[in-house]
Length: 262
Image 1 (cartoon, rainbow, N blue to C red):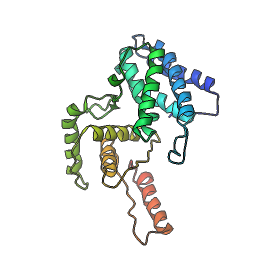
Image 2: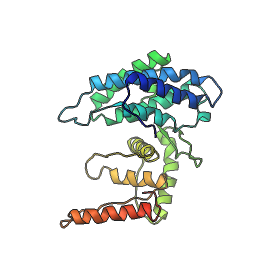
Image 3: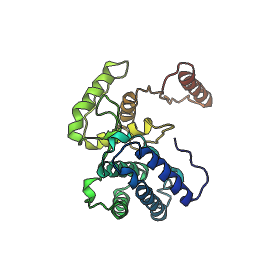
Image 4: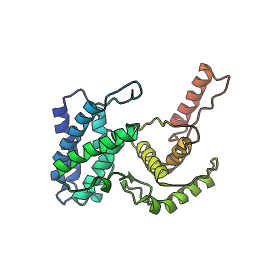
């Protein structure tokens, strides 16, 4: 995990450029020279985001800081340098991580579209790309398409379905509650997002949605993909602070004494 001290944006720009360039230089091919452009555009997107997407009573979580900027770089480091062979590979990775950190937190289609157009203009300017917005808007990275566990650009949704059905069968054949899921594009996108968060150090997310929308199912399957177990708190009428402490105790015992990844 990249630790972000209380530094200025300029200082963070220098640090992130050095980190990203150092990682890319491990792979010959010239993409390391793009590290500075990537970080500069990320800083511009960050500054534009905190100015244009302000918190309101209905969007109180629209708060962004330098830690979010660091998560973009942290996410890019999950992809092995040998899998970034050319400029397009780096651009797709950068675009995906930017969307995961910033765009996924926007709650309506109008805000998401506005962010997509804004980030597209900035990326084209810094990376000298001539891409249509639709070319990368649904780009996803993940590590479950093959058995190698590499964090790479995922294939289109229809090509991923057979692989996900195999993973679901493995989950159902284990000591788990059987889930009957039908995979479609939105479902796969949410699964990829959750799986990405779980594979990160201290990764965490709050899933918001109506009952029956698949939050629990996607979280359980994503956890299984990352070889994790799940722990659920069952709320009853008699559930009080004492029961909460007992549940936390059970969870800590699983993680500490039993050495389970929960």
